[in-house]
Image (tube, rainbow, N blue to C red; front, side):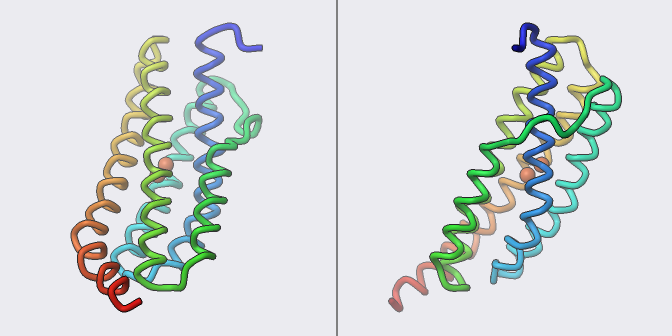
Length: 168
Ligand SMILES: [Fe+2]
Ligand SMILES: [Fe+2]
């Protein structure tokens, strides 16, 4: 049973760590499935950031004397399962890139929600340094989400996918 906000906050941090760890394992495979070079680059770049996100959480675990392995994030498990399913339902190319983008945006929004809540809890509990560190990750998740959207709306969805669809 969790009886304090502090316990809920720590549980949220562990859940985020599980989510980031699952992403670190899955992102190389997802990047490999993308055809559009900018999309691949974006995933590989975000993999490096994702490693940093996990490290930041470890800093917080050390500070608070927590272990990192007590929670499995079932939501991220589900998001990744769905992403892999959609990839398997498409051929390599623009349409597969579109389903990868759809999955990536969902994943980023999940992370944005998680870090936003964790940051708010940290502030409420008086852990200002925690809030600052969580905010760094929150900003990067937002940037990653926007970068993926920009790739989609700025080129891929306009030319690639529509062109591919018209040749069906
Ligand atoms: Fe992350
Ligand atoms: Fe992310």
